[in-house]
Length: 489
Image (cartoon, rainbow, N blue to C red; front, top):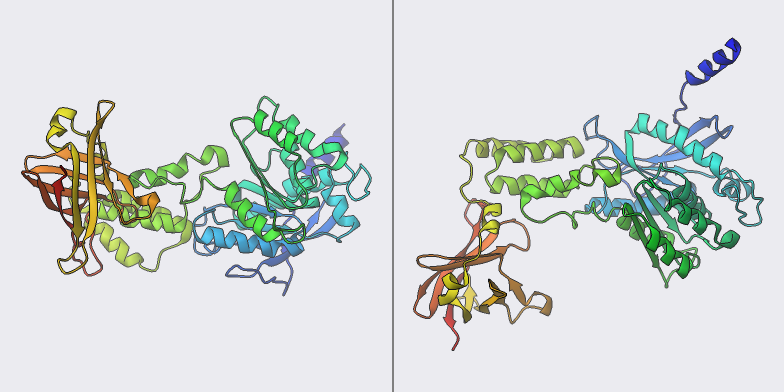
């Protein structure tokens, strides 16, 4: 018994495998720096395997404690370039987080590939039903991912990307492993073994404590049978996100680039800066903290979004909040080029008293009661302009009572149909007349307020940004928009 214990102790203290760089083995991909080639001695596989690691653009500049989501790419020797190109385009535009890409090369593209990517119990391309898929997944989980975490600040969530046979193993991992919160299966032959993979995943969703999972299938030649996908969707836990889409103009050999782009975008759809709340500004960064439960970690928001939040908070007179957002920007992406200018602005805004008018306060202002709004109910027809010698733009105001509540909207007859009618988010009756408005549809994130003086059946006045102090690059305020409206008969 003592001898057995000694052997176990030796196993426990054995050094964890590391990624050892291969000299002059950089691989050209779309990133700022090429992917680096490494070897790792695997005790699980009994082999030395080649992997490629592509680091995100901010890696060298970000804080030492920042961790990045890891995307594992199967068939890494030829699929990495396509996944990297898609990931860089998406992350550069703030649609997915920056990631560490880890591409695992096959020992060969025939028997070695089939052995690694085929789970036991299934036959692929005439293989046996005792192939090494489980052992290969053990290698990824016990050896490769820990090495990436130690050496390249990898972290949650883990995403597994595979195409064809790689999609088989990725789907099997989704059905049997808790390691991967996100799985992207490209043109996967689900039908093999009488839909063996589908039954596996259907079985996992019935487990009482199924962890959050994002499973995405993009298909050209192969994919899910309609009835089994419908059953998967119908029985999925609330913590699961499932997406399936066919690419009818692609072939099995051509769909990887488009599938990687659409699939990664779908996997991280609620991370996208397009999904974050537009207003108020103070709700934008906390939105990303709420995603930690589903992703398994708090992700740094997109660089462009954080930079915009810093600027917007400064315009709102919130110096302390701007400093916190700036610290997040530096931790995630390194100091920006205009760091000194931003820090000077933050210091200056911190000296000011708190703003008396805020975007949140304006948006929370109750609309007038039907009785208070009675003098203004109806339709007002008029026009707006910036300079008297420039074209004037026709507009119509409509104010009504619906279900006992006052509502207002502006009609822009020259606008495209989807923008023609815009509801008001602010409406107040004033001693001089009335003020109405809505959030600006772009930055700066202020409320555009139209402050009107009423004389009989005429409304005149000009607009301003509410809740912010927006200045042009030369320091001058934004030019107002002037208006005049007449009550319609």
